[in-house]
Image (cartoon, rainbow, N blue to C red):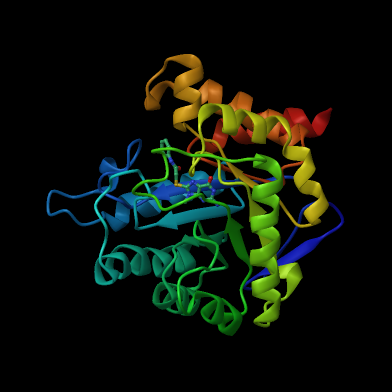
Length: 281
Ligand code: 8Y4
């Protein structure tokens, strides 16, 4: 949505021009870039993570998205304690050292509260604040939130995704979550929406969502999309996760042309270049 700005813990951003969100994965089994941030002890290397965040920020990322729980189908569940240990020291470190908006990818109210105290500027919840206490947590910390659509739960969502009317159902779900949020005292202008590519969707579903992305403009809220290196791009190109950069950028440009305001990506420098070309035209 244009002509709108949001305050992310003191950093104000307008969405007249699109923005990049760089992914900083701190899940040990993350299927692309995870392991390099891990020490032999199994802990996150804070030094390496900070360097990576600095590089993404310098390359033009407005947001750094930090997540400690893998949503990969079949991934091990992470205890709250483990998620806290992985995510919070990094939020603090980045907050102290880098002028960037810190997005925390979590569904846990406890993490939301602690992350806000540690300097987070955005809560990115793939479960759209459906966990008990999550809406109340975001209402209390008064930070913007990204509400994402998912059908089912990460463990089983790709088994048999099914929709009678895909775009209508995704938009209705987001509408109902927006209503739940505003009813709980969250400001409508603190909400970002996301169709949730790959979350309970077949290739066909993902293609229809991308092709019809401009229909999400009727929600009149900033639109975030995450397409980077996802399985749909592997199905289209036949390439493995590490070789999906060009496909990811092509998908990102299509999303931009259909009104996306934030692109979540592993490849910040190239996505920023693509965005500059889009902007120039
Ligand atoms: C390689 C690496 C291939 C990672 C696929 C993946 C989204 C998100 C994720 C999204 C928002 C992912 C946390 C899945 N996707 N948050 N999170 N939107 N808002 N898979 O699309 O990146 S994790």
